[in-house]
Image 1 (cartoon, helix red, strand yellow):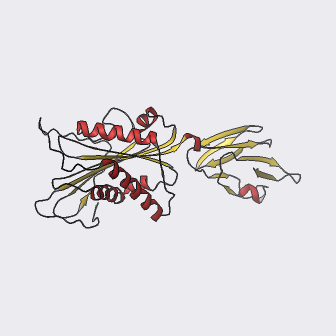
Image 2: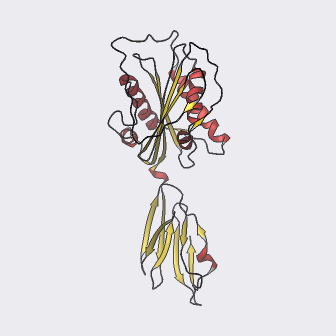
Image 3: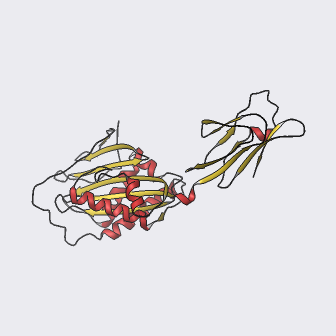
Length: 289
């Protein structure tokens, strides 16, 4: 698959390389994008891919004046929220634990010039948990940029944000409707001059949705949660926890003697309770609280 991004101003001696990767719940998709004279991105999806650069023992001098990396991080955060608002998503809050995990990993990538979500032998949620973030959802975007002509804080942040926006997997992470928090990390490799950026998105464990299904009839009841078919035996109460807002449907045959309420599609909020019972007219109904 090939597609054209927003046009960039480039000259024949200028070579800009942007590589991005995202991870969501343990599924790794690596997207490699190279921009030279013609601004065309090539996308390649693989199960596992990593990269390591070894330019030798020398170093590439830091540009003068040095970029204010804290400002670049803030611009990435602001640009991400502007994109979410534009796409009718709630803005994210900065989280110090996610920021700590993202910065640690950005510095590790810059120090080693390796490029993989598991470059340090850990998964993203391992790093965020170590930093103290108790999660029910963790998503991660990583990328690096290099330009021999240098960057301004605005141009570097803009390149990172646009690159993620224009890559389907990274875009999906940026626009995930259920994450609430974000941490951004940024570091420069003195060996290659690359700037490595990390975005860690999270939904805290405290935001998990807990709800109950209670069967007060004398028969087994079948229902589905997000398409997964489940049952509740007579007299049982089952408590469910979900990371994302679920969809609950009770399953009846067309001729079943059930009320209209029993045929509704429910979207349980946290703390909801659904009781299946038999009415005085021997119809089955569902009471929601």
